Image (cartoon, rainbow, N blue to C red; front, top):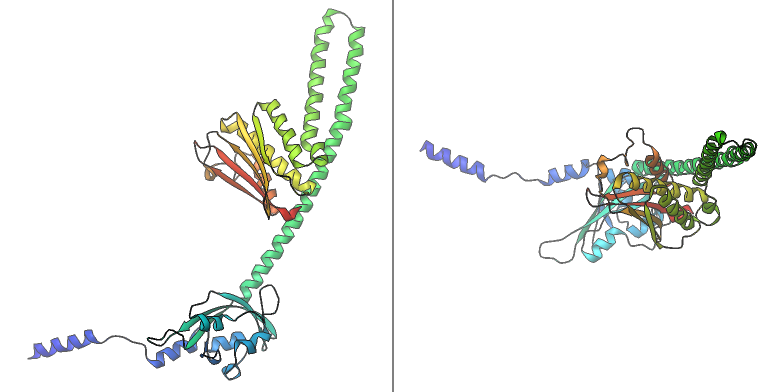
Length: 376
């Protein structure tokens, strides 16, 4: 008998299920950190929890009976424009019977006399068997602090871009100065030395001096050519006068002469005018990429393509070489003191662009320099 009673009590304990009472639901509603506002079938507020009161800066009594239209005069969009004319997520949920995605609003809080940025998500509620919702509740998250941090980050990013542009301008001015010094002083001095060496050669007609003098002349001639090439690389006149495409064609020919890499330029879209400093950054980056192809790719050919989309200018360098794993290469982070392409990558990123690397071992590589068109 006692054993049977124990079995019955056990069964009763198993059948008893935990459930939320009205008291528990109300307690949850009152203590939630997330704001909750309930709307009836007419779109009027009939309940709001304390978190919503704090976000909106109004009591439940002040909110009771108000519609989104009544509150729109205190609401702005993310772009700062007034919200009237746009259907409120709660009203849209009532009309469509569908949960609405998160909408960001700036809601004026009269207690703080400030706008609070709020994420609002509207969810319709249905009675069993009904197709249309009889209530809608909105979940509200105060994201004011996050928005302020985002704005601060954006302002800092703009400041970095401005500083990077100034740095690029200063760097180009220094390149121009060094190129001028090489051309006007060093190269001219070597040319004068060659002329004087020719005069000396005439005076010393002996075969004893002829060979050494010719060797010195050849060294001076080669040095003059190297200086001219270096001057062009520092500040190619064609880049300043004829534009980026013409400068890249000239670079392709120079690379062919210097290292034997055949560079094909194709899909050359006519670009909008770019500031010289931006052209120079792209030019120097392409030069580093082509030199990397000649040194490491195991390929005798490379391709450059240039295109302009609605928002970006894209310059791509491709090869059919051995490829690489980008995560393991110094292209992303400098190794062994190699900073050429890394510096170019950093400058491109600071100016608002980016370097996109696509490569696999054995499959060649495709590296794109993507620059916002608004940098023109």
